[in-house]
Image 1: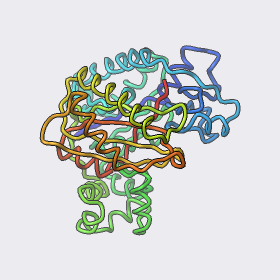
Image 2: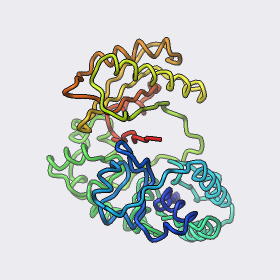
Image 3: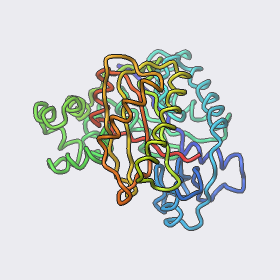
Length: 361
């Protein structure tokens, strides 16, 4: 049976800022742009009891926590610390799958130190992270990625939780449906309408019914409810998309102004595609309105989309499908080029419901 560890750094950006600035320690802070259109990237644990969380408007966060300290991000420092942490991972295994700058899966079934218990490895990794970076991490240990990821969230911060195979079904059955990987707010709402609030209730729904309601995600939910997740830890992750977006200082509803902003977004996207060496055939336009409601529109063509001359006509075509005006102005525009694999199609259907963060730098 496999031995999988999921490591997740605790409030990573905020913790690095508190480490490097003693005056911030023990105080509620949020990393982000301190402006009208700023968005919280990470909130410290001192800020979270007030309701401050990532992806939240900075203005809202400051209303919830009037003594909140907004700190600009230092992303070069976060990358350096992340590299230190990954060096620790590789002391135990080369089967490391980064999910983001601050979390990763490790397959330690066969590890470099011949340690039998994955729990022992997780403890050692946590201790080394603390010694070398003065930061804390939470770890989840189980026999697959689904359970390991949930377990790492279970006793945050500085936690360690093990889901043993013999106790997995009981553990899953007691989980609120919102805790399931791949269940975002929209999917949770649909499940609630079906009377599904827990893993146990999800387990009672047939595969055919879940597939009918949730499409490609249905079999995934069916298997997760039974503790089944055969996905391997993937060392090399293929890049699925390249994108960029802009939150405007003021909402815009004038057509010519929107076209100008779209043009600038296309130019930035062209540069990012070139630097990444990426090839994709699907262009997706994201529009967020003044009231934070948002829509996306996509188009797939039979050739790769790389240059401004290829992207701009498609972007204008997608924008023509979007309604906006001075009465319903736009707050944010985003463009993404992606491939056309099954994974991309699943993501386009909202299986993972992972939104793009608005960063105002």
